[in-house]
Amino acid sequence: MKKLLQYLLILTLFTPLFLDLHFFQPYVTSQYFYFFTFILLTLPLVFYFLAQTKNLWQNKYFLVLVSWFILQFVLALFSVDYNRSFWGDWQRMDGLFYYWPFLIFFIAILIAFKYKTAWQKLFFTQQLIFLATIIWAWGQKFSFWFMADDQAGRVYALIGNANFLAHYLLLAFYLSLFLFVSEHKYRYLHLAVAVFSVPIIYWTQSRGAWLALFVSLLFLALWQICQFIKTKNWRALKIASILVIFSFLSLYFISDQRHRRVTLDDATVETRLVAWDAAYQGFLDKPMLGWGRNNFQIVFNKYLDNKIYTGPGTPMWFDKAHNQYLDYLVETGMLGLIIYLLFLAWPFL
Image (cartoon, rainbow, N blue to C red; front, side, top):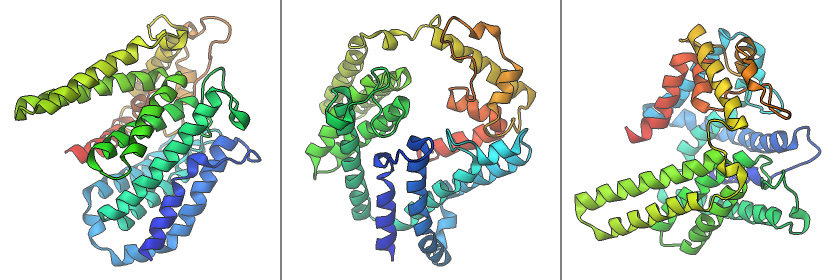
C-alpha cells in the first residue's frame, strides 16, 4: 500500500505540465484541480498509515507545519473579511480552504518516503518534469510549432506566469546541482537541467529571481571559501572561484531594459515601495494578529498614496504587497510571521 501512496504522490509532481483551457483561469484552476484530485485519492491511505504511525507526532518539523496550519485558521476568525481569508479567489486560489491538500501532501511525503531509494525515484521523476518544462519554455522562446506563445517576450511554459516559472526553475537549478554532486546516476540529466534552466530564468525577465540567483551563488561561494579555510581542500576553493565568476557573469549579461530597471526611481519599483509602506502602516494598526489572510487590499485602500501614479499604464491597485514576508506580517501579524520563519529555518536549526 505504501508503494501505491508513493506512485500517487509522484503523479502530483506532473501538476506544472497539466493544462486544460476549458477551465476559468486555466493556469491556476486546472492545475490545482489536477493536484487536488490525486491528493483526494491519497486520503484513505494517509489516514490508514496515520492510524498505525505513532512517531510522526514526534517529528518537530511536522509539528511546526501543523501549528502554522492551525494558526492560520485561528487568525482567520479575527480576520477583517473572513470569507476572503477562507475562500480566497479564483485568480490565486490561495484561501485557507485550498491549503489543506498541501498539508495532506506533506504528511503523505513523510509517511511514504522514508528510504533513499524512494527519494531517488521521486527526484528522478521531478528531474524529468523539470526537463519537460525547460523544453517547453525553450520552444516558446524560439516560437517552435505549437509552443509559440509569449507574454510580451517573457516565457512562462505551461505554468502561465513568468515569475512563477522563474522561481520554479530556481528550485530546479539548485536541486540539479545537489543531485549532480551527490548522485552518480543520471548525472548528465542533472547537469542538463541545471545548465538549460538558467537562460529561461533570464528570459522570464523576473528581476527578483535573477537577483536571487546572483546572491545565492555568492553565498555558495562564501560557504566554499569557509570550507577551504577549514579543511585546506583546494577543490572547495576552485568551486568558490567558479561560483564567483558565474555570479558576476550573470550581472554582466543583463543587457535588456527590464533587467536593468532595479533602481529606486523605476516606476514598477516605486509602486512596490508604496505597497510596502502601506503594508508597514497596516502592520502598525494590527501588529499581533494582522488583518487576515488575503485582506491586504483593505490595507492598501486605506493607505493609498497618490505617488503610486507615475504615468499611463501604472498599476494603481495591489491585492498583495509583492513581498512574502510583508504579506505575512500585515495579514497574520508578528505571530504568523514568526511561525512562517520558524518553518523555513527549522531544517537548519
